[in-house]
Image (cartoon, rainbow, N blue to C red; front, side, top):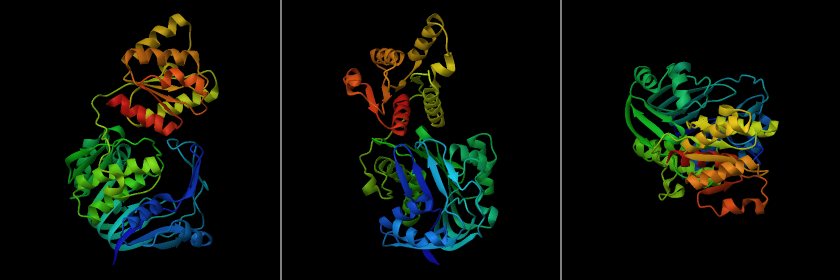
Length: 398
């Protein structure tokens, strides 16, 4: 038996803004991160024969051993921005024979091309499928000790439950003795051991937030620190959360506390929060942006007041008082300020006067238009949508 195995995809990842085009995927990112921390890693993944030599050169580290399995296609994911729903191609994927891995410790991710049958003493399983996370044991996989890493939507699907408490109770019966980590966005990560809540670890502040791959880093850091370093589940999850913050800033996958940093600011939720979404809504592109931000914030569990959705168009007598009422209830404002729409500028000024933090997205700034906002202590200007959304969620809840 090899000492440690990572089973996970080698995928192309393309993002329009910020502009990123790389060959990595969940398995590659995790394997490199764990190897960088000084561990010997066998990485099992699907790959067309024509790409195998290139993959070994691009996704490389001295302690990393590639274990490719033949597939007919290379899969690539494309994103408009790190929070958008990816489109992958080819649209139809040829099924490949299952990967079979026997190792003492395994980190297993869900795969697009086929399945992975695991025989391990200890395994961390991250299905990475909100729509259809397949149960670990369904294909005959076995682990003496199992940890599941699921987000708050996945845990309900995985357990066929309508609420988290019911899902955990079900998993306690179907996966006795297992550990379940539920990643819950701005609320942090809840850690359950054999159905009992051990505690919650917070997310940590990062100056920039590149979201693609953060889940890979979390699972890799948890697996390394729990299985290989002997940390408790809570300790390993906390380190993993810090590693996510480090990766989000730098896009460097790490699994070590030393590299992630011990001085990171935890984001501790103190209120439910409400985000007022300010921005022009006069063109299709402007409405698309408002919809993208609404979906992203609500996906993080943060309520949104959107004048476009919650008030609509109409006369000044109809809309102004309702917009102001929404501002009065807000704990943070997200403002799209490219073009310096007069209504949006009014809403920013109102929020500043009320002491409400304002997070501005400006991707094509005219510096003279930003003077008043740059001079306001509670205005924060970002050129990156993902960063602006996450900072808004954090400001709204703390």
